Image (cartoon, rainbow, N blue to C red; front, side):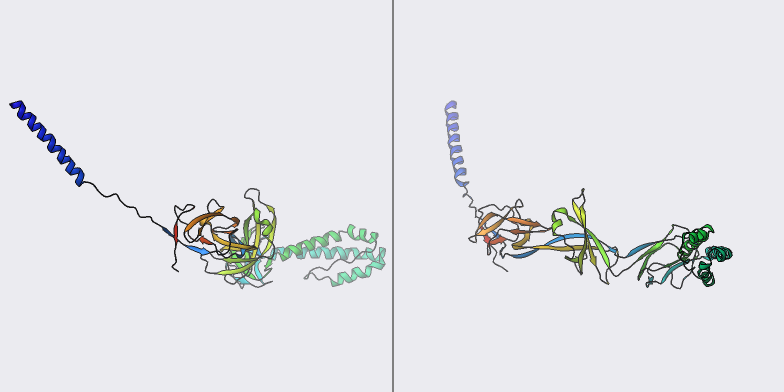
Length: 371
């Protein structure tokens, strides 16, 4: 009896479990999800081929075209001048920049002039006897000799005998010694070779200046040069006289310049060629950093697009039939820093203006109609 009861209960339990499982399965069925096809929106523009200028970009610092470093060729104490020898002081052409005390040197120069005069005077009696025809010109020279002025050029000799006589008396040697001292004497006074401004001053009045000592730097602030390096592959595009547009880093100011020199040698390490740009403007200062845009030449039937739109540097996406992406091959002519000039696209063809993540050939898209 007990076995029959247990068997019956076991059967009922199995039947109940079967119906419970069936109920749970029937009530747990969910509808399959339906995925909507997402069509991405793209931005396009119609291709309009035209003549596009190729602009080479470079950058560099301005350097004054006329610039000199001042060095002393004589020794002495620096004297005070009406205009201070300090940075920022402007001087006109031929105006005295600085003066070095020359009292001691001047005394030595006068002594040498006196020695020359004594030599000529001592030879005059012999000259009257041996070369009476030449006596008059030497007497005139001696009479015009002024020790306080620059010595005049020696009279010209017309015979070898006269020349040997003059040389043997030491007159020629003494004359050139005096001329040498006169040249050095003038170097105690340094004058401005052009109108400009003092950009560096390393000495002050009362300073003992020594031979070879650097005194300062003087520039003409009205005209500048900028040295730029251009890739050697574009060396044939660099021409003297080409226009250049210079701008500051913020692109808020522009200046007009031109190429004045192009180096004939390519740097072996960087494979670049050096070009020099000349520019003049009252706002420019030496040392300013500018960016240059050199208009090299123009390409006909081309357009300029962003480099981000290129695929493998040879292809771009276009939209055909207003709905399908198509990958087409183009001919890149010149690669700039952010843009590229390309050829090979037909007019009015619709080309992407913004890159599309996940794009592929044949992809269905929708053109953005908003402006």
